[in-house]
Image 1 (cartoon, rainbow, N blue to C red):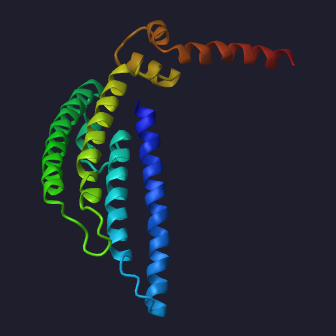
Image 2: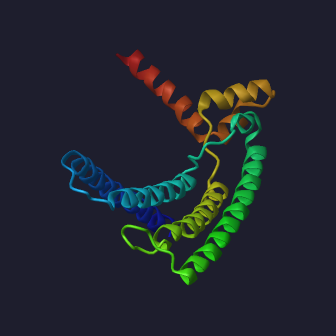
Length: 199
C-alpha cells in the first residue's frame, strides 16, 4: 500500500506541474497579445495547492521534511530510534487533527456551495487537498515507523568490529563472530598472501 500511495503522489505532482506549466505559458501569451484569458490565475493557484500537498506527503514517506536532527545524531542508535518514534507519533496526532478539521471545513464549504469567481468551479476542488494530504501523511508516517522497527541492524565492517573489541577488551574471535563481514575479510587475506608467495 505504501508503494501505491507513493505512485499516486508522484503522478499527482507530475500532472499538476504539467498543467501548471501549460497554464503559465497561456498566461504569458495572454498578457503579451491581450487575449484576456482570465482563468489562468485560479488554475495556477489550484495546481500550486495540489503540488504542495502531494509533495508534502511524499516527503513524509521518505523522512525528507526539515527537522532538527543534530541531537538525534549524537544519541545512541537505540535511544534515537525511540525518540524518533515519539516524534512520529506526535506528528500523526497533529496531522490527524488537521485532517479532521480540514474535512469539517470542507463539509461546510460544500453546504454553502462556494465557488471560484472566474472558473465557477467549487472551492472544494482545492480544499479537499488538505484533509486528503494530511491523511496520506499519517499513513506514510505509520509505514515509516513499521519500516524502522522491522529493519535489522546493519552488519559491522571488520575494522570497526576489531576496533570495538580492543576498546572493550573483548576477544577478537567474539567480535568477528558478531560481524560476518569481518570473518570473510580476514579469511581472504591469507589466501591472497599464499598466491603471492607461490608466484
